Length: 75
Image 1 (cartoon, rainbow, N blue to C red):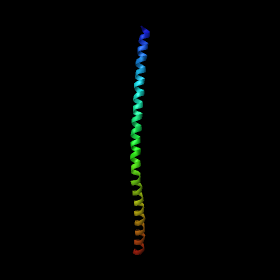
Image 2 (cartoon, one colour):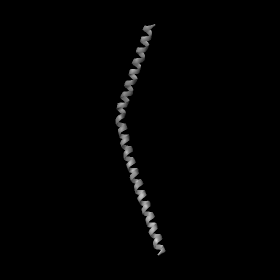
Image 3 (tube, one colour):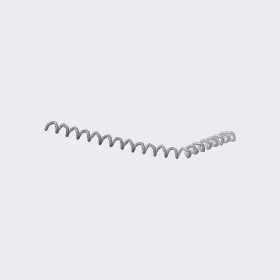
Image 4 (spheres, rainbow, N blue to C red):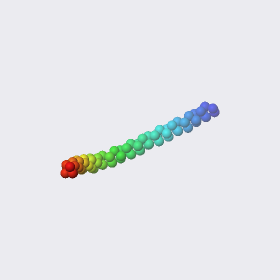
């Protein structure tokens, strides 16, 4: 009878371990999906962000030139 209790307890422990492994696998898959979605959204935003940075760079150069001209005319 004692052997049956040990086997029963081992079965319970193995079942718990399998449950935890399955949960870890599902969590890993969910994380992978979420990371893929974030990466996809980031790729979609890159061209817009690049254009915005280029535009701001051009504006900065224009403001610097205007500032230099203003200093020349003010002196």
